[in-house]
Length: 581
Image (cartoon, rainbow, N blue to C red):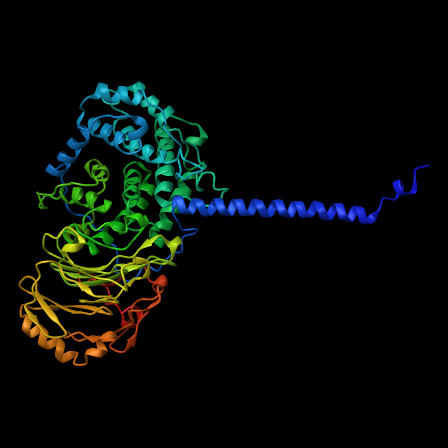
């Protein structure tokens, strides 16, 4: 017979062992959670914040133009110069140049059908240098989707021309250099424990390239289910992504440097996708290009942007990636400018040389010249920064936006006044911001029609001399019909635009309308009529403007529509005061 203590073990000892086991399980779980959370935080730091989900916005009262009647040229001096630039670019090391430059240098040669033996031999000699998805320290081999997005046009443009893209080269492109196929999208950043959604530009480049390879294979006889974009659900997933970006607005708006890669990935889809995908990509491109038309003047713009913070000091007015494409397209108008040169971001502009996409008529006209005065607000959703523009023939007031914390990766910039002159960088245009010099502390949303205010002084470009002045105001005549009035202290800067060519009359009208200097810290009456109340110390979640003519405005720009305002050339209602103005 077994001993009693063997038959009936000590219950306290059993409980102690179970408790110890559970403590170990909980400790292991806590450590795993900390490791996963820390890894996720590092991924956000290295990869960049991204929208966890897209929040649809109301469209607003300003429609995106869609009418297309213009007859565009196939080529121009600008596109010829840009194609030549890339065709002459040396084919350097694939390991170091494969991400961006090598694919463009190959594309330039194929477009001009030059050095074809060397171009084909180069492609045949290389293999993928990395993997798709964002790069970070646990995934250092990422970013190969940049290369796939650059090689995809070569396949579609020349894959059926065996005397240009040789058959062996085409097969190597399909079998080796464009490895992704099937219907399972790579949504999360690799090696982030499934916690971090990849950024928009990576999703569009990676899954756009996968989708288009599937499409090529299906169009060329493949009956394999992984190449059927409808059956494998990849087309439905991609259409959902495009619709989310259209209805919520792109998260990486005006991104430096990633906006250009979003645009080129969309152009690939618009050129080579199914009818449904082409239409969806075109709608989103129309929206992004209309935003550019409203927020630029003569190919110069200075909006707030999301990613990367190290570009916060970028002071160029034409250095964003979008401008290279815009210039390339405008050069193709039959009556457009003939002296457009692409001197930066040529790696983005090359898409305008071959892609079939063209602007709607009104977008093209507004990029070239603003026909009338207008005012618009562009919403960018929760924890975002709005874009606000007041413009017209020869001028553009552009709000610099607001930072919303480290995760937002939003760069607030000074409010600027861009004129029809040759200014190329921030120092050459009138601008204002504040408080202080750290953009993380600014709320530079204080723009209304022909008016701007911020919690800091106004910077006047070198060479500007006032044409009329008092102790409180300086007035500068710019051109024949625009006067720029400035009030500047360390606590508040105000800019008022007065249409007309008499600086002294503008000064008199402003001082008559605003006799109390102390009130300028909180309120201003425009000689054109509006009284504007503002709070330059507004929280970073609120519009600086508080009331217009005593009526409260909608200051919660997290819920602003995608695009609203007053664009007189459209048949839309003016912006109601209580709904944003």
